[in-house]
Image (cartoon, rainbow, N blue to C red; front, side, top):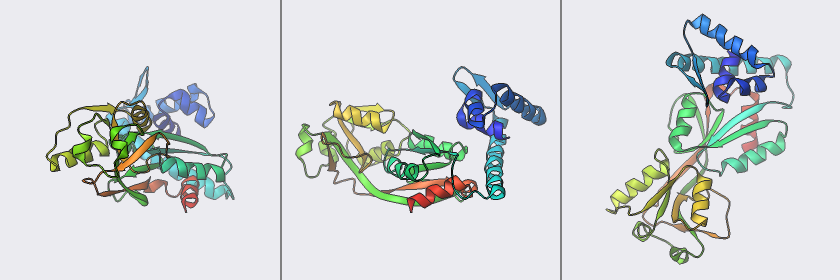
Length: 279
């Protein structure tokens, strides 16, 4: 079950083997044994890694909970006094405040390996539901009983513009000012895309020109290269001298960016230590 859970979380048999310190053939044998017990294929292996079958998804949810419980038991039995080794997977829908808090954690626990990735809001929620990550930093997360949620920061949307852009001199902007320019927005499925469309509809405005990007760093680079004006949550990134944040008067609502942990992973020492580092 540990082998199966790691293959799904890492995306390949080779990565799981490296994580567990065993051979790829050993991992393959474990997967075959589980599939024999279940009586069905759990994984589809392709050139880009593995994908779960429908039954595989059901078994993975249980396997991941088992792996977390097994790790807790091992920690209790060995009575670890400190974290010397281990790993934790973290995702976020913006670089900040996640990276700032990860930096604090790695200074306290330098031997813990951290796997961090950026994704849109919908993908972040899906990865939480499918138990593929330990911790997520999500803005306006779903309120569900199987999730531990801790608010980190509240912020509102602002326009990001290059310092030489016409709107950079404004103390405050309105959506009517922004739609005259090319807007840089995240892809469909993001919270920002949804909030901006609702605000435009409320203001009875139509988006004239837009460019969609995959992740926040790409959007930020696009703004710096003069592609257009971006709309981001305030403090989503560290300040840049060539970039200006301009408040949007008709988007005053604040949103909570929260740390989210599946409750069955709260007992893990590495997860507890991350929460302690936050405090």
